[in-house]
Image (cartoon, rainbow, N blue to C red; front, side, top):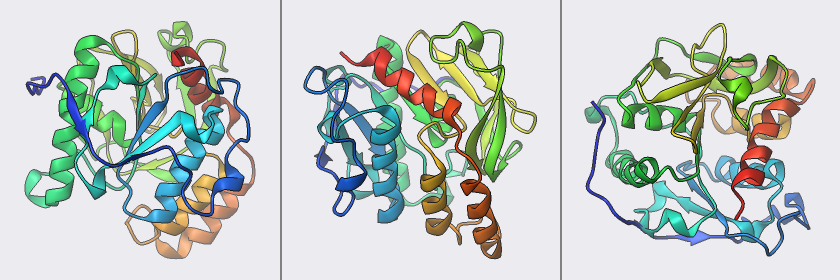
Length: 279
C-alpha cells in the first residue's frame, strides 16, 4: 500500500546556498547555468560534518552547479519547514546512515521526524510528477512511499560496482547512450527487493536487482551514488568506518581501490539530471 499524507506544502527550516567552511576551493568558480535557473535543493541527513559537507560539494562538482544554485537542508538538524518544491528546479535527496527498512522502534526521534517530512514531500513530488532524484537512501524512501519492500536482502559492499542498464533504461534520457554496463561507486546495507507497481526499473546489478528506477516521467532514484567520485568515497570511508559498512581495518585498502580510477558514466547521470531540469 502506498503511504499517503495530506500535504500541499512542506515547511523548510535551515536552508543554505553558502559553501560549507573550508570547502570553497572545491566548488566550481563558474557554471554553464550561472544566474539562469532556479536553484536545486539538497535534502541531507548526515550528522557527520565532513561527510555532509563533502556530499554538498560533490553534488556541486559533479552536477556542474555553482554554490548559489544548490541549497541544502540538513534534516538531522531540524524540520524541513516551509519548502515549496515547485520553487526549485528539482529536489535531490542525499544518502547517509539512516535505514528506511529499520522498524520504527529502532529509529531515533530525529530519524522518524525526518522520514515523516520526506514522505510528506514525496506526496507532493509524486502526485505532481516534479523533478526528484533520490541517492541511495533515496531509493529506500521513494520505494517505501510507492509501496515497495525495502530490506537487507540485497546489500552491497563499499567500493566499485558494475551497473547494467535495462531495456527501459536505454530509452530513458538520464541513461540512454551510456554503456550497457558501467562502473559506479556504492555500498549499502538495504535495497529494494520488491519493486512498486508504479516503478520502471532503469538499471540493475548482479548483487542488487534494482540499481535505479523511475516513477512517472520525472521522479528518479538510484541505489548507487552518481554524486560520488574517488575523493568523496574516501571521505565517506573515513567518516563511516565504525558504522558497520565494512570492517574498520579494511578502510585503507578500500580507499586504495577508490583511487584506482573514477566512474565517469555514473557521474554523467547526475550531470544529465541537472541539465534536463534546470529551469
